[in-house]
Length: 430
Ligand SMILES: NC(=O)c1ccc[n+]([C@@H]2O[C@H](COP(=O)([O-])OP(=O)(O)OC[C@H]3O[C@@H](n4cnc5c(N)ncnc54)[C@H](O)[C@@H]3O)[C@@H](O)[C@H]2O)c1
Ligand SMILES: N[C@H](CO)Cc1c[nH]c[nH+]1
Ligand SMILES: [Zn+2]
Image 1 (tube, rainbow, N blue to C red):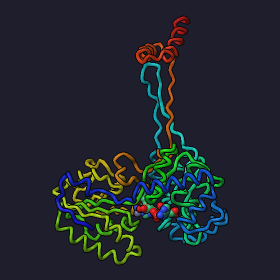
Image 2 (image 1 turned 120 degrees about the vertical axis):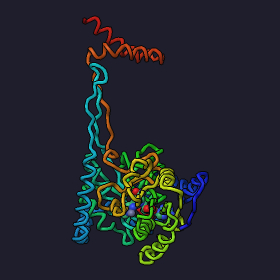
Image 3 (image 1 turned 180 degrees about the horizontal axis):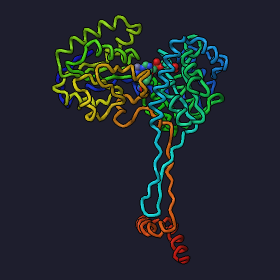
Image 4 (image 1 turned 135 degrees about the vertical axis):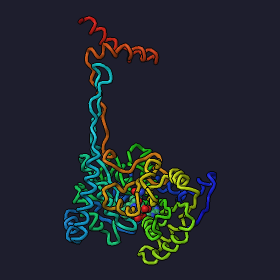
């Protein structure tokens, strides 16, 4: 990890750059795959699964038999863990349901909003380097609570051409309707445009690598909604002398092991912490099964020494990390100073991986600075709200003239007339 001491504000933007693949090349690949899916449907999905995943898929849809087989392959320990995690995710997301009351804005003018589920949704579950079955809970549970009528899920097939049993078990547990063996750009294109096997959905959810994220951003431009850009994982740890270097190292490595293009950042104002964390990272790295991947991610990563907690928080807000760990004395005093982050972990005993799996918060979160403008996945992500209004005759008599004045001023005569004809009738009646 590169160490940067007391950077000037003018240097912050350069320091905080994320590692990215050449975007022009990426967009070219996305266009080509999408064009073929639009013409060839399933045939194109299979072609690109062979090209990018090296898997020959005959039937994209996971069969009932495969679902049943998966259930028998998942151990009791994992089933129990999934049940507890699912309960917490459900509890946290169910509490997010909000229906607005009727508001009488003027006398006789009532307005309200009603939330309705997005009817057909597509979930993407990453599976390139590791099958992230926890993502099934994070997307499937809120989709179900929201009341989405049709929930389909795409995930890349593993080396044996099958989907990881835990992904299938979790899909059944949360009530996903259909699972398809397809990942990457081709999965996003399949769900956006529809093919013989996959229905076209109204909104696509889920994290993924840079290919998946670029594909989601492209379909969004083409009119299919997406949750947010949720690309390669990242974490920023804010730490002072109260933090344990072993814990910091473990948290940094937990996101570094996701992929070579992950980025992890330590920000401190205690220079004496730097060497201790570096040492702990080196030591813990050796024991990881994914140490090569984590080592590559550490090359993109930084330790930044700042002058104070205030300056460190300012830098963190500018970076807008997907995950922010606050390991400082009196961590609660930082809460109101955090303006940009996907999900925040307060105190030395709140590891980021708790949010990844089981605390109840959602782990599908904005990366690459998008936490400045996007929230992570939540119940509302699966809903849209329709606004309603009802105006009584007296209400229109009162508000109508206001509308007439405004419509005339915008020179929209028909708008004005829609009110005037009613007012005339009401006045005649009275
Ligand atoms: N932000 C979040 O909320 C969040 C949550 C979980 C995981 N993640 C991130 O998701 C990512 C998962 O990545 P992954 O690769 O393991 O799985 P993935 O499922 O996202 O991507 C795998 C697919 O990428 C495609 N692909 C691979 N190389 C390609 C190439 N050269 N050209 C075109 N397509 C190619 C393949 O089709 C493959 O199926 C990681 O970066 C992880 O950090 C993010
Ligand atoms: N840290 C990931 C989000 O960036 C989520 C995850 C799933 N499994 C493990 N971690
Ligand atoms: Zn993780």
